[in-house]
Length: 462
Image 1 (cartoon, helix red, strand yellow):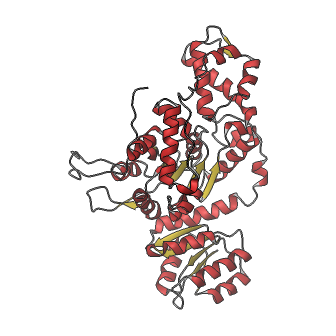
Image 2 (spheres, one colour; image 1 turned 90 degrees about the horizontal axis):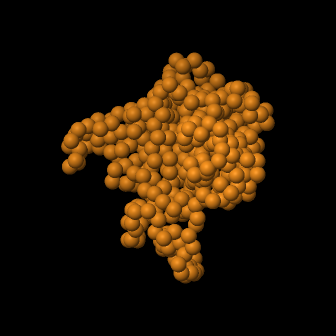
Image 3 (cartoon, helix red, strand yellow; image 1 turned 90 degrees about the vertical axis):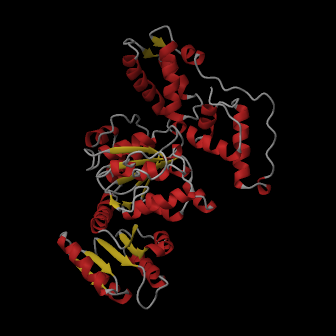
């Protein structure tokens, strides 16, 4: 049963017809008193809650009713309905325990999809213990995790989570340090979803300047700007009916965040230079190596966008948190590379595997693969030893002169702190942009943007 809480008769009628047509049993409540009566009699599968009632346009009654529902029914999904101008109210509701929010006027397909997703997620997470304790063999028999290597409990917990949420259309936020495999997890979510035969479009937001953001994501029409010789389809339209992976979402500037929020909320957009609205049906997966909650507190990331993208959050452990998986990863990389480079008898000694477990790898899995590939390319024998890895490890150059101490934090702005950090990293790595980007945990393109912003000289030659 779906419970609809709204005091507008037109909205009640519209939503009742829509969901009854989709096979739902529907109950209606005009406000807090009627809601309590219904919940005394039945437990709904999901609740649609309007945040404003005619007697109270502040939303306070809606928040109080949401808190009552959460206390009484902590596991029943609640979706808020609010106007676009009341997004701040929706954010308050998310903090009070709502599962999602829908803005008016809604799209019927998107609204039904959101309710169905919320119900599926509630069912999938109601008994998580069995899945979390599942072995790697059990997970592989259920899901397509072929390219994700490891048996550490933290990794198995991640795989169990994505196995439960992949069949839904829930937006997923993947967090973790650079090089931990966020793109692989995004691909696994898509491959285990109902959209797996549809496009999977990857977008590195850190590599798109704010001036090109609209054109890249939403497309443009001929004549939209000087060099627009033909129409161009944007990434969202290319991903229609499939999934879109928005990597480095923490690098978006404020203006781009607003534009992205609108398409994630309404599933509609206008190509640059066009007044024609287009609709897309996409599953959104985002990733970042930044702490978005800290960015929200600092005002550099929109709170409403944060709640829109992180219905489900998956944190990937750093490689140092799962050292027992390093030998498995080393053997996996070696098996693939010996085919690629035509060295079929290649293997890694046990001593080398144990030595690599203790190696400092701030670049995580990406750096480990680089270390293995160097050894495969340059080692003369068929058995890779500790000496082979040691000999070909990339060296970290020391700064020519000691770096000056940073001024006290209280005397610096956030921009000043960021500039000082970049200047110190550039000096330490002798202006090698690739090394600096990896050390700071950002993309090269994101670093270029910051170098230009702060007027820091750099060279593209490395």
